[in-house]
Image (cartoon, rainbow, N blue to C red; front, side, top):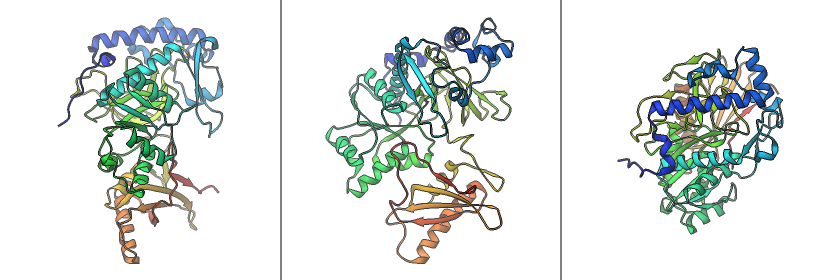
Amino acid sequence: MTTIPAYHPVSAPDYLPQKQLRELQSQRLQRMVKRAYENVELYRTRMTEKGVTPDDIRTIDDIVKLPFTMKNDLRDTYPYGLFASPLNEVVRLHASSGTTGKPIVVGYTKEDVDVWDEVVARCLVGYGVTDADIVQVAYGYGLFTGGLGLHGGASKLGCTVVPISGGNTERQLMLMRDFHVTCVGCTPSYFVHIIDKALQMGINMRDFPIKFGAFGAEPWSEEVRHYIEEQAGIKAFNIYGLSEICGPGVGAECCFQDGMHIFEDHFYPEIIDPATGEALPDGTEGELVLSTLSKDAMPMLRYRTRDITTIDVEPCACGRTIRRIRPIRRRSDDMLIIRGVNVFPSQIETGILRVDGASPHFQIVLDKGPDGLDRIEVRVEATPDAVDDTVASVEQFQKKIQHSISQIIGLSVKVTLVQPYTIGRSEGKMNRVVDNRNK
């Protein structure tokens, strides 16, 4: 039976009556649009092109009149072209890794950081975390938003924070045990790696006092959640965010783990058709678009996240009135097109983990065959006791995984079983795909 966490004052906005929430959203949107129009050339130019002025934005429903913002806009205006505040009011900068070009740079005023801390604290309250908990932050610190984001929210809630950052997995386990850590935050793939390291060291993580996991920064399946919860004896929760908006804290699951509540008093969600940009009604799957309603340093109006999800308007059993989005399993920009079929890495992960004995560690390798057609190979690690040393056992196991994946994606794939611990691990976001088709 799921127990609803005790009400906490920091989470009061989660329970606003709908009429009051919409009035607040409308007021904040009007202010944000005016600020962006007056201080950011890109927004002023695009709104002028659409024939829209701040006076045309009277309620939250008018948001559809505004132009979209894209990730390339942040790169094209690098580093400070989207800032609406002067640099002497900006107290912190974060940036992406810039692996696909110039990094995107995001700024925060002191008030922006306060809002960020607040929404992350609201995430933790939704899980059931209190000021009595000890939170180990194993997200990376620095320009990446994960580490400092979770740290700030846990501190605001009054938790004891262990700011260990990513890596040094044996030390992570030592501190979890010795410091009596009750909540861990990191990417789900890194926590799976922590579990693997514990198994190698003969450590049963179910003996640890950890109760909560705050996992995000990459798509992950229900099968991975079940694996983590079974192996570590914890409740594994989604936390959602993106650097362009604020980092972690845009939304999170509550104790019922039934979709992620978006803190829509600060971040207004829409769903659009990713192909046409047309706004879609709640309950329809499409691309998530987010607008910041209170971010002074760098307003984001109708930012296209590329995340595919659905807005759920059904009341949640926890009593929160802010809307939920369904868990994000895929992005419009991580889709693979294999022989004309759309394939997402998360589908392959689901197929693998439906087979007993398969581990969550896999890699997708794409090549061209002699006939010029795309070929897909999935390299999978098995748990040590999944197969014996016979060729027949290995082949039978590979066929089970092949069948499971093919049932989901509708394509035949080659599955290659590899030795445990031979697929690279990541301390941050996992890169699962090696695409050799254009080499």
